[in-house]
Length: 67
Image (cartoon, helix red, strand yellow):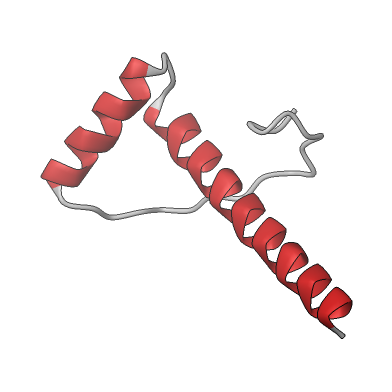
């Protein structure tokens, strides 16, 4: 199962380089939620992707009804 609760369809590796201060902040956010840094980053990316797709759908709906 994927971190967002969906069925996982395989996985791939993404290597991410960040400075130590940013990694410390991300680790603190993850720890507050009882998550690993990896799970926290993936969940954040999934949420951001959903937010973007939702906004695009709302915009398309508004354009449709403004028609």
